[in-house]
Length: 400
Image (cartoon, rainbow, N blue to C red; front, top):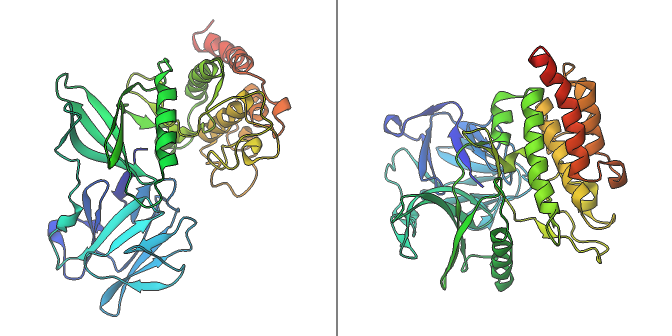
């Protein structure tokens, strides 16, 4: 996962700091932020002064406040918690901050606190990989993201000059177990067996006593999640074109023997490359379909996009599960409303965007039926419906 960290407002460059202004160093990105106000929020929402665009971070995860001649931190009862120097904070309680305090949001994003009188960045934040050459061929250039005790780096192949992404797992980290290693190797090898333009290539797996490193294809571009978040609802024709591309890769996965079920389709897992094509970017929830099983997992995937059967009690997930996720992805892109944070059940898309076609509304509604038997039963059926809806618009577009 590529994480965006940015100041949205009320910030100043580091060299312009005044006494007692807060400075926060974001370890994963290597960026240091200076903020000139005495109270502000940090979280996923664009309303936060410091936005950390990570789905595990709450919309308004924590609050920093300056009072009684010092800075304090408050966890806003976030779902995934806030830690200060390794201790989990109680929601709603103020904790005094001191120089070099380590703040971890949702167990994935680390900030180091120091105020404007403490201009130097602590030396302990030096990364063990930056500037090194892994496996004698991958030069590690910079950190580009983090998630669940993993860190991702941009690396360059020393001989070819090609850029790759290296994702690392620290075997000595809290929560790591031998079973984690087995799962990483299994999932990576499963991806290496696949060949499709929308599936990134895996170049290598590197392992030593402390780390597992997976080297995968670098995917330039923004995710569809970033696009809809920054620009709002997208036009019908591009969304239909993207949906057909997604159908193509899902059809490929479902056609494997045995079938692969993706289980986490959402705009944030789809990168729009400069040439207009899409690429999938996460595969950690993908499973191999087993017709002999009565069920598989509980609560895997992303809430709002995950089909009801992903929460257990409705049999195992199958191709129709991915069709549900694609339907919710179209819903988000067409309406600008994120299913993950909706306070109510999704309404028909034309209630939000009346200019959308009735035919497309029927397609999306059928994709997201609660009962898998009432959805499109496979990607071919969905592709056929999309083509039939798209063709008349092409004729009108070109005056035919």
